[in-house]
Length: 446
Image (tube, rainbow, N blue to C red):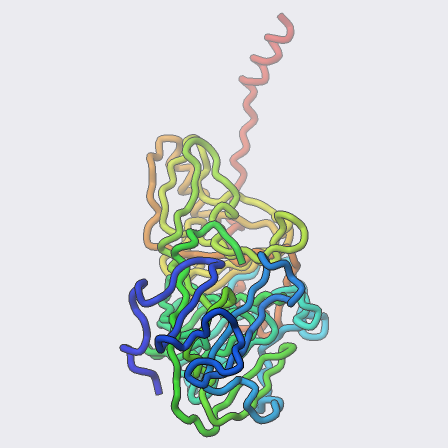
C-alpha cells in the first residue's frame, strides 16, 4: 500500500534547508531535551539514540552525528538472518571473481520495468564499481527498476551512502528523520546507516544509484532540503528490517516501525536537491572548462583535488564561446566516467543515448562527440551565434578508481553493441596548407 499523498511534503517550505548545518526538528513541541543530549528521562518518555556517520575521534568540525528521540530504540529486534532468496545482483566487493575490467566504451539502452511485482530493494542491481565495502574504500554504481512500494519493511545500508537519481516516477521516501518526496530532476542522499522505505506513488519507477564506501560541492547550500520530524506510533507486527552489510542482505523482525522518531537534532541527516536550481558555469570568450565546473557533490579522497566520486550534471544552459568547438571535446581521462540521462537529449550524442540509458568510459578510454554532432558543429562555422541547450538533464558519476563491470551488465540485452559505430564515420579533414609554409620560408630567406 502507498501512503496518502497529503502525508508527503511537496513544497520547499515543508523542509528544513541548508547543507552541512546542524538542524533541530520535533513533531511534537517540547519533545527535544534542552541543555543536554541524553537526560535521565527524556521528554514524553522517549528514548535517546545517537547515529554517527564519522568516528568519535574525528575533529569537531568534521563530526557528523545526530540524536534521535524515539518511541522505542532501534535495538529492539530479533537477530539478523541472511535474506532469502539471496540478492544475486547486488555487489559491494569488486574482484576478478565477480566482475571484469573492460576498456571499451560501453553504452546501455534503458531497461524495461519488470513484469513481476518488484520493490526498490529487489529492483536494485549493480552495474560496476571498484574497491570494497569491507575495506571502507571504493564505490558502486547501481540502477533500479521497480513497480511496487516497499511493504511493511525498511532498508538500511551499512556499507555506505546512497545517492539516488530517479529517472521516471516519483519516490516517496520515509526516513528516520522524516519524509522526502523526490521527483525526476531531483536527487536524494541517504547516509550510511539510516533506515528508509521507498513508496512509488506513480507506479513504475526507474533510476540510478551511486554508493560510496567510506559530501561538499558547488551547489548553493540553501537549496539542499532536509525532512522535518514525523513519526509512526502504530504497532507493526512482523515489520522487517533489511540490512545491507558487506554487500549481502540480512533481515530482522520487529513489532514496530523504525520511523518512530518524534524529534531529532544534529548534522547527520538525509537530504534532497532539485537539480534545476543548480547554476552552471561556462565560458564568456573562447574554449570551455572541464566538466568538473558543474560538480554538484563530491566525495573526496585523501589526495587533494582527487575525488572518490563526483556527481556532475549537464543542465540547460547557454553556449556562447567564440571560435570554439562547443560540445565536449574528445578526450582521454585519468578518471572513469559513468553517464546517465534523466530526460531530453545529450549535446555530444545526436542519437542512441536515451533517457534511462547509461554509458561507461573508463580510465584513459577515448570518447567524445559522435560523428553527427561533430559534422553538424563544424558546418555551422564561426558564424554560429549564442545557442541555448534546452530540455535536457544529463549527469555523470566520475571516479579516480577503475570500475569493474558486473557480468550481468556486460551480458545484458540492453547493451548497445553498435555504440562504437557512432565514431567510425569520423573522417580526416586534414589539409596541408602549403601557402602558409611558403610564406614562412620566404620570410626566413629574406
